[in-house]
Length: 246
Image (cartoon, rainbow, N blue to C red; front, top):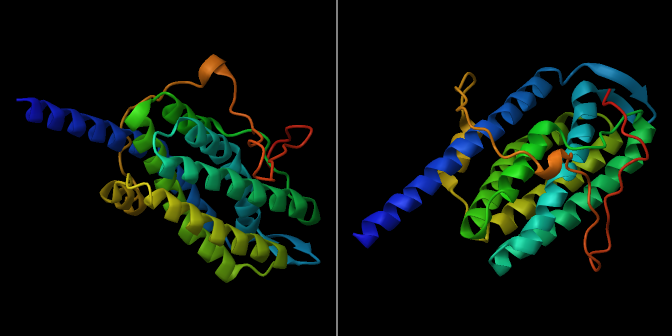
């Protein structure tokens, strides 16, 4: 009887995670498809080569990824129940801090305006993980991060293969190494649900989105960029103002 109850509880948690990932991640997949459809349109000529709309969106999205994955990495370092998850959190914090520094360096050269706050959807990612504890925290954090990293990996490769802008190429090289590292450390936790990851990454257009409302960020405040603990040697620093992404 106890075995049946434990099995039922595990199935319930797994089912909830499936709904959470589907509701949160699918809009991100649609956004990536839209970016691909606009890839060839040149929006600026720079001394580093032509800048396409997909190039510009890529730089913005790399910056935006750090605005939620950096705080999520800090949560994993603080609340992860296993050494492997805490180590994955350290990799997320350090990797996205370095990517952010590159974005802030090249954005003025390319005339790109960077976001300063995580989007409402990205805030939901962090709030969903923050609303869990213990083993559920570990599983939710790992699978949300693994799905999103798995989705962006082919996008990085496509930008790297097609961009004619040398600065964007450099960022894509760095992002490729960083995303692969993050995927690897997440998988080392032993918590990745590969069936769910594959489902989210191959979901066809028009997939109905379950109605699931994740918890709101505590206090109603937006998720802001946090500096990491001493010792990692890198910090994400937001710009002085919060300009609108152009």
